[in-house]
Structure formats: C-alpha cells, structure tokens
View 1 (tube, helix red, strand yellow):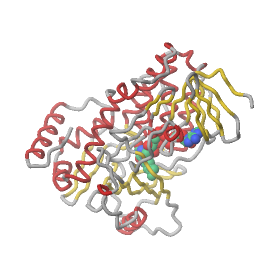
View 2 (view 1 turned 135 degrees about the vertical axis):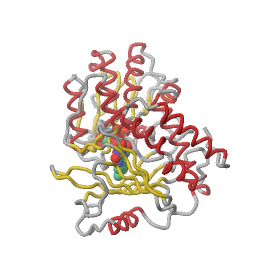
View 3 (view 1 turned 180 degrees about the horizontal axis):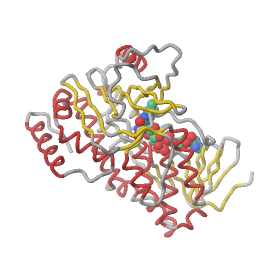
View 4 (view 1 turned 90 degrees about the horizontal axis):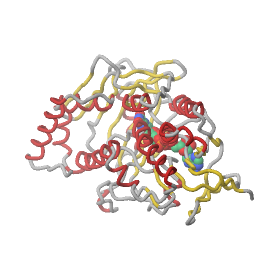
Length: 409
Ligand SMILES: Cc1cc2nc3c(=O)[nH]c(=O)nc-3n(C[C@H](O)[C@H](O)[C@H](O)COP(=O)(O)OP(=O)(O)OC[C@H]3O[C@@H](n4cnc5c(N)ncnc54)[C@H](O)[C@@H]3O)c2cc1C
C-alpha cells in the first residue's frame, strides 16, 4: 500500500482545536501550510453535539490573526446563576459572546483555514497510529496509510490518538444531554446564558441558552454532569454511588418545570472529557490539544478552550517544524503555563472544590459575589477583568477559605 511521506505534521481532527492549531501555525509561518495536513473523519458541514455557547475571548484570539468566523448566532450579554441560595445575574451592555450552531461554525472555521491554504483530507477517519523512532504511521478507515514526522491529536472526546499513545483511559468524563425547544412563556431573559445548580445531587448544572435553529430563535436546554474526580483522587470509591437520576430524567424534569412538552423532541447526548491534572498530554511524535487533552471540568465549556489550545499549540508546532524536533518533551509545561492551561487547571481544582468539598459554601460565594460574576463575564468575553472585581473575588474566596473549606491551589 502506498504511503504519503511528505507531511511533517498530521493534525487528526478538524474541530475547533485542530483548525485553530493549523491556523495559528500558519500565522507563525505561512509556509507551514505545506507541511500540515488536517485529517477529518466527517465532511463539512457536519454535526457536533454541542450547545454552541462561544466566549468572546475565542473570537478575539482569532481576530489577532485576522480570522473572523461569521455564522448565524445569538449574541449574549451576560449570565444568570441559580443555586438553592438564590439567583445572581451579571450582565453588561455589550455582548460577552454568542451562541452558534456547530454545524455552521466548524464548517466556516475550516473554510477560513482552507482559504489560507491549509489542506484537509475530509471523510477519512484515523483508526490506528504506529509511532516509530523517526516517524508516525496512521491507518485510515479505508485502509490507506499516511506517514508523518509527528501527529497532533485534535480528535475530541473519544480521541484515538490519546488512546494509542498509551494515556490510560479513565473516568474523567462528564455526561451532557441537550435538546432544542421553542421558548416557553416563563423562560428567562433570552439575552443571557442561564445556569441552574439548585439540585445538590447533581455534580453539574442545568442550562437554558438562547440558540438559533434554521433561522428561528429557540432555546437549547441541557444537563451537564461531571463524573469522577480530577485531582488524582479518582478511584472508583471516591466517585461515590452512581447518580440516582440519569441526565435524561433530569432534563425531562427541567422541561416539565419550563412547561415544555417533550413529545417529538430530539435529545442529543454525549460525553465530555475534562482536563485531568495528572495525565500526560504528549509523548515523542504525538501531542494532544482540545478535548483530546481535556477541557473545562467545571462547566464543560470547550469551544473557546479548543481555539485557545490552538493559539498555544500553533506557534509551538511552528517551532518544532523549524527545529525538526518532534520530541514534544516540553508541551506539557508550555501548555500548563499558558493562559488556557492555567485556566483549565484552575477550573479542575474549582470543580472538585465546588461539586465535592464545599458545595454550600461555594454556592454562597458564587451566587452572592457580584464581583466574581462580573469578573467571570469579562473573562468569558476576553476583556480586561476589572481590578476591583478581581480583588473583591479574591477577598470573597479568602473569606470562604477562612470559614474552613480551604480552596487548594
Ligand atoms: C451536549 C454538549 C454541549 C456542549 N456545549 C458547549 C457549549 O455550549 N460551549 C462550549 O464551549 N462547549 C460545549 N461543549 C463542549 C464542546 O463541544 C467541545 O469541548 C469542543 O467541541 C472541543 O473541540 P475539539 O476541537 O477539541 O473537539 P471536537 O469539536 O469534538 O472535534 C474533533 C474532530 O475530530 C474528528 N475526529 C474524531 N475522531 C477522528 C478520527 N479518528 N479521525 C479523524 N477525525 C476524527 C471529529 O469528526 C471532529 O470534527 C458541549 C459538549 C456537549 C457534549
């Protein structure tokens, strides 16, 4: 079987992480497009189960390299967070982000990369990876083989690259289920992202996000549930008993509360992989980005993170190509000290703190600290977070810690 030999870098997966990585590598040196190939299992436009809430910080990062992904969407200007202690709303006059359909967004994003010369191999799934001392060989689902100097695993939650480089398959999964419905009469403000964490038996939350389906304003509703721990204490025993209610039952209950008839609605369920603090994300000639490496444990947010993984990985790859060094020995360090790496590591800590160790206290902090919510929406938007909001958030966190539930950094 003939092998393609002339690819330096194979990016497996053409979702936001893979496309962003290719674009940022090309922005570093435009000739890199001749050295990269993106292999995507689907053909654009393809579906991706996702609520599509996209933080403005992803658009800002892409704007830095002149990329603008214009697709239909709903602008959002803030968030509401509900807990047993009440509801807190943080909003501002300008959008903090938008809600997009992934079918549209991913296709337009890939088009932006194609317009810059990034080559794609669509409709080809990687089924196996063979790492050798001087190259990697991947086998596609049609039996063809590709050879490259190195591979980037951007193949999402079920990453075959992750598995084939020997990262153990653990339970750092979240479950998420969603459904698009018409707005109900009692639906909250459609200009906000709504998070409901009133049910303490749920290690996660229920959401209502405005969305757009075939040009019609709708509401995407769903349930996010974190399974397992992310701080190394992830034994079967520490995960506790299985949740009494499944995510679908929880979503049905939520629809009932919103007065939405579930008959005929299409429920879409999928896993999410949160970043683990204790697993490698690179071995010689193979590195992981996006959800293949791990995304936000706290909320299951992954689109902006995937784009920002690319912002760090692109220049890193450009350097690897220039030097011909594909050991990826320092990818873990480079990622961990990047902004997105610090963000994801902090969220992994916060997830354990909020969902496991100090829930009532965390609720008090999160639903009563206007400063924290304000800092959060500015961060989501990619704006400078006001200093007063940061200072007061830190103070609130310190108070919480003094009350006996230390937050472990
Ligand atoms: C129900 C649900 C709701 C969500 N809502 C939100 C939200 O509102 N906001 C948010 O920010 N995040 C959300 N997420 C998370 C978000 O969808 C992901 O974290 C994000 O898509 C990760 O991007 P990625 O590029 O790493 O992976 P993906 O988007 O999964 O892209 C991976 C790509 O790799 C391709 N691929 C997979 N395997 C192979 C293979 N073997 N060979 C070749 N190609 C392959 C896939 O076809 C896909 O195109 C949600 C997730 C779920 C499940």
